[in-house]
Amino acid sequence: MAKKQFFITAEEGLHARPAAALVSEANRFQSELSLEFKNRTVNLKSILGVMGLGIPTRSDITIHADGPDEQEAIAGTSALLFEKGMIDADQ
Image: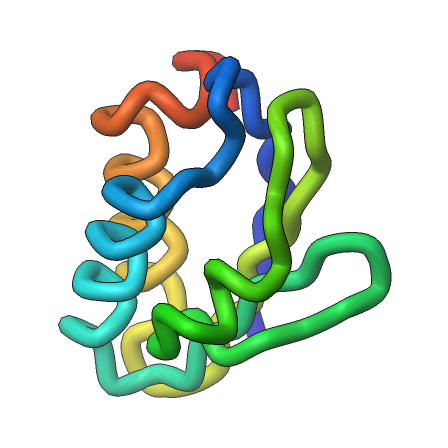
């Protein structure tokens, strides 16, 4: 299992468009992916689950990946969060 913690820096938090892009990115991988926020964990491949967390700015989240391509999944979701302006470059 692989995991990585992120700090959401976007003023609007993890809102609909980047959340949808993150779910789409997660669905590219075979591994099981989950998103943890405030001791709640949801399937990262479910837009309803991700949006249901209501992740605001300046929040810590953790992405967990378990499966044959878990390292690639962590790298891909990390790159997407940066590309969408959700996190800073040093994460």
